[in-house]
Length: 464
Picture: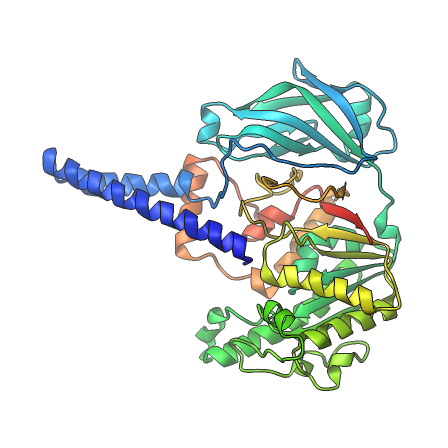
């Protein structure tokens, strides 16, 4: 995790410890003044309440406004919500991405059950207790909106009467040569399976083996290093094989073989090699044997920043992408994701081939671990932006029901998303299902099956 998210997490845990200490003191006082049996009863009830309503990692107030700016050329049209119908004044013909800015305020039930907005044939959820400016994604519903208007109503929340529609127009980037930069196996599928599976010409470059946190493989009788090596081999295979499910042949998939969570250290000391934290390996060539072309890092196998940037520059010149799909450096806090986009920028500077467009994605967030909120199969509202972001464009292509199933199956093939839920999370989900009304998909237990399989994919558009 990047430094800011770690600070937020530490503050969140500190506040929880203080609240727990105060609660225990009050319970002890109640036990002395009233009855001792109240203490264990209230402890159990308090734990259930925590798991149902207070276990989310939300590092901002639900009353904060989201803060987005859009490019100057974005059409901004006044909209109204009257008697359950959303209408827009003005013409937004030709716009493919429609973002509705409006105020959402939770009802009293919306402090205990997830509030959301049903708009047209979609539903998009927000934080419990929401009270502020939010952004709905209406992409794919423009024809109905331009006609009689879209039915809209709050679920455990009230909607402001006035709103603003931001209408953005993009080319279909799937028709251009594109390259997806995946810091780890599964990042390409999480962010862009729908995009790359219909692309005319796409390549996928995975930067790391993803070998750490391999304790699940120690049940096979392996020590930590052997388990990490096995996990690295499996995820390397995933990065090359799973894209075929989306129509990308192995000769357009490349695994660079660098080591998980070492990219930031590599960036600080570009000439030094950084081996795996857990597997004991230091030579990246062990993961490159199935690559379709030789790369600069093959010469010495050193896991260095210099080799990473040279590898990416060589791949740009070989595949000649017009569009690059890469993690959002301001929104996605994972340290490997931030470093991946940094390395890509350096490679573009060194390469003789110059792409035209960045499509930025966020598989992780600083502020809210549940985004996109709500059940699988629904739309993707814009994520929290409590601090101002660059005024990038947005592109949100739709995924049919069939493509959503294919995307879920692509995720199910990823070894890192296959493990069973820990017992604590399983109990928490049962409590949240019963008391908070939350639902999870049948396609897989990992949280990414809920978050990533949606009717939209979402990219921030930045010209190079």
